[in-house]
Length: 289
Image 1 (cartoon, rainbow, N blue to C red):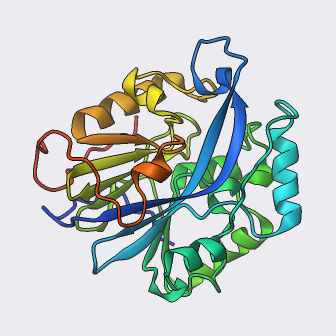
Image 2 (image 1 turned 90 degrees about the vertical axis):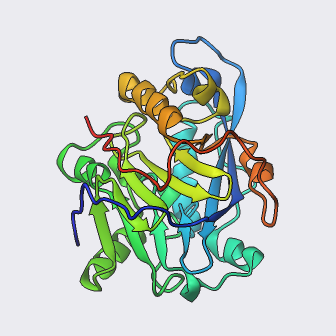
């Protein structure tokens, strides 16, 4: 297990393609999504597995819900503690996602986990990803082990199977636990951002139309456009700061749970071109407090 930090990326790199595959839908009340608003209407939060590739390096961002039905049922019950209507719909598990993408697990070089919670880490099964190096937030794992959270309960920071997988990955030298920023490949940076949870992470990707920043600490496009923290942010000030910083250093900022991501980043689709990129390469910006 390595605890890497402050690694300076090579200039240039990429361009990468990004494909967002919807793997679940979770209705949530608006007050969870929008800070300071007494919004009791429901909004669909989408979860994705992202395929990222530059032709030489191929990886996944997040792994979807747990493969085990009992683990998924427990996650549903936890979400329904907020409201009975808050349960997962339209669930697709990682083996189906890989099949749909036409990608073999052995072709995956890396996995970037933007959250340690089981709706992002559920597909962490070594047999499915026999070669992948897994990147996870040091702050998220430290919170689980040293400062057990109440939201969500500790049992939802990895499943028993995925926790065992972390041990196997560490033994094999394929686990990177970092607060970053760390360069995964030229043009691709992973880093802990905090905000939603201490272990929330962001990914910056040099795509064909500029640098795309993917933020777990922003749920919807509105959070990004209005620099509005999510309603259940453990640290709303950090959430706002990270959104503002990503807007400054990226050409496009994507809220990781926005319903439009599946259409915006379809397999084989051409992304619209935003403004001219402001710099070359994915620069190293340390977002830790």
